[in-house]
Length: 325
Length: 243
Image (cartoon, rainbow over all chains, first blue to last red; front, side):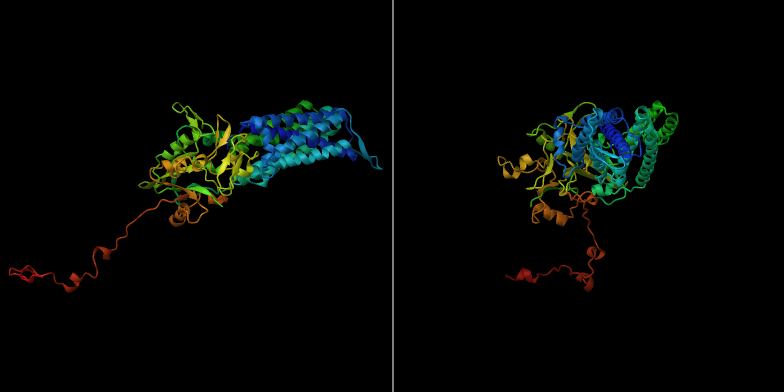
C-alpha cells in the first residue's frame, strides 16, 4: 500500500494523545489509592490533559487531509454498525470530550470529592471522568487497529497483532512524553512513568517483532492464477491496459526501492526501541527533561517510520493486476 | 431476487478496448458528471475508468497463448467494499444487486478501494469521490431507449459478443445457462466475496482423428477383394430397356 502521510500522522499523533491521557489516568488512580503522591491538579493533570488534547486535535486535523471531501466528514459517523472507520470517527470526539472535561476540571480546580474511604483515600469526580476516558481510549485503539485488521485479504494487516501494536505503540509514546512532562511538572512521578514506558516499549518490541516474523512467513492466498482463473504456472502480464498511471498504480504501491524499504525497517527498529530507551535511561538518571524529550522525539520519528513500513509492507491483491505497464 | 451481472468470455475477447472506450464515453456523459481525464494527449495521462482490459501471456514460448482480460466491478454478492464505507455512500441495491456509490455522500476516504481485492474502485481525482462501474444503471432501465439497447454500454460495444448481460439468479437466463454449460467461474474465490460477474475460460476445440477414421476397418471393398468390373463394349440392359 502507498503510505499516506495523513494517515501516518493521524495514527501516530492520536496514539501519543491516547497514551499521554492513559498515563495521567494511571498516575491519578495510583494517587487515589495512595500509592503515589497526589500531584498538583492545575500544573500536572490540567496541563497534561491539554497536551494530550493537542495531540488528539493534531491527529484529527491530519485525518482531514486524507479525505477528498472533508466538508462531508460528518457523514462518516453514520455507519457505526458495520464500519470500523465510522466507529473511530465516533470514538475520537468522545475521547476528546472526556479529555477536555478532565482537563478543564483539573485546570480550573473544579474537581469534587465523591467518596472518602476510612483510610483517607479519596475518589475524585475527575477520576470517574478519566475512567470513561480510559474506556474511550482503549475503544479508539481497537477501532484504529481494526480499520486495518478487518481487511482480511491484506494478510499483513489481518491479525490481532495489528490492534495490539497500535495500542502498545500509542501507549509507549504517550508514556514517554508523560515521563518528560512529569520530570518538568511532577518529578516524583518521573521514575514511575519511566519504568512503565520501558515495560510498554519492550512489550511493543516483542509484539512488533512477532508481527514482522508473521509477515515474513506469510503465503499469499491470491495468486495470478486465482486472479485470472487460469491454471498455468507461468503467466506474465504484458499490459495493464493503459500507459499512464492510475489510482491503482499510485495508491497501492509504495514506489520505494527495495533498499529504502528494507532500511526503513531497521531504522524504525532502532529509533522506536533501543535508542529512545537509552535516552530515557540517561534522562531518568540525570532527571534531564531535554534528554527525556529527545527520547520522545526520537521514538516519535521512529513511529512515523514504523507506520510507513506498516503500510508499505501490506501487499494488496489488486497489485496482481498491475504488474507491468 | 435479481442479481444483474456480466459474463465475459475470455475465449472470444480480442482485447480491442471497445468496451473501455464506450464505457468511458457513456459514463462521462451521464448525469453523475464527467469522468476525469487528465493530460489525455500529453505526458503521464491519467484518469478514471470503470473498465480496463489487460493482457497476459500464458505459457512459455513457443507454446504461449495471449489472454485479454477485461476487468470491471464484479458486483459481488457479498461485497467487502460496502460494509467498510463510513458514510453509507457505498451500497448494494436490493432490487437488482448492483453495487453503487452515492457521489453526494462519498467523502473520498478511499477505504472502500482498500477493501476491494480486485482494484476496481478508482477515485475521481477531480471530483474527489470514489467511482466504479454502475452496470450502466442509467441506461438499462431507460424506457426511452429501444429494448435491445437497454444493456450496459460495454456489452453493446463488444464487436465479438464476448460480453453477456443478465440476471445470474434466474437459472434459465442466458447468462446462467452460459455459466452453467460453458464453465463460468469467479475471480479470487478464496475471499468469499461471491462475485456476480463470471468469466468463461479459454476453450480449445481439437479434432481427434483415429486411425480407423482415416482407413475404414470394415470397408466392404477391402473385405471382398474385388473391384467393380471394367466397362463392356456391347449394349447393356440400360441401353435396351425402356424403364
